[in-house]
Amino acid sequence: MKTIQANNNHQLDDNSCAASNRSPRFLKLALLAALAGLLLGTRALAVDPPPLIVGDWRLDSTSRTLPPTLNTAVDVGSFSFIGGTGSLVISVNAASTGWSVAKRYVIPMRYNLWGGGTSNTWLKVLPACDSGSTSPNNFDLDINVVNLVMQVRLRVAGTDGAHSGTANISIESTGVDTPTLTTGGGPVTPPTSAQVFQGSVLSQIHGRVGVNVVPSPDAALDIGGGNAHGLRIRPTAAAGAPTTGTWYAGTLVVDANGVLFLCTVTGPNGGTWKQITP
Image (cartoon, rainbow, N blue to C red):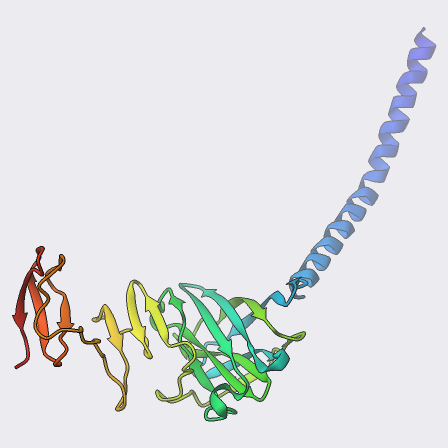
């Protein structure tokens, strides 16, 4: 029994020594495996994931680095539309140390846009939804359309000069051939205040709404009509203030003669009105 025990103990000691001798080898293999996994993981993150395609609807995702230099643009891609018509819905979430901005754009497409009047020109697209800048850091999205092709870029519109940002981008497209996602860029001249894409001119930030303009912080509704357009209230069919139905204080109406009235007291039978213009 003692001999057997001794043999067993000896066997255990041998196994223990063998395991001890193999430990550095196992550690090296484990370290190599972990390093390979890290490298593969890093490589995977650098490659855009495959698109999701359903019929003529497509979803692509990518990312770009926004440098901390004002009026520097980074390309997003080039989109060729079948028959020259379709749409893009682009969501951009950009973040860095101390700042983050999220925006969503809805961009309808037509061959050469409006009959060529704004073709081959970089135009600023107003966001349909905007989280607002983390002052001063901000970005804009611009497009340039020639014939069937729309180019898209992100442009640094505000920066603290110190922190670059990572912009994660998702692109929902309809009516697009296989897009070409590009990563070039450099200093650019930003579009002027008049060079705004007219196919998407309604923008909202923190509950404020802008029409043809990014809404001002001191306005719930901000209309950018320039020198040619303004706010129009469609006239009623009859002359005079309303006399039927329930109306609410603060309501403005224009009667059939172009006279402006303000409802001052809420009530049925038309409420109470004050004539504003002669």
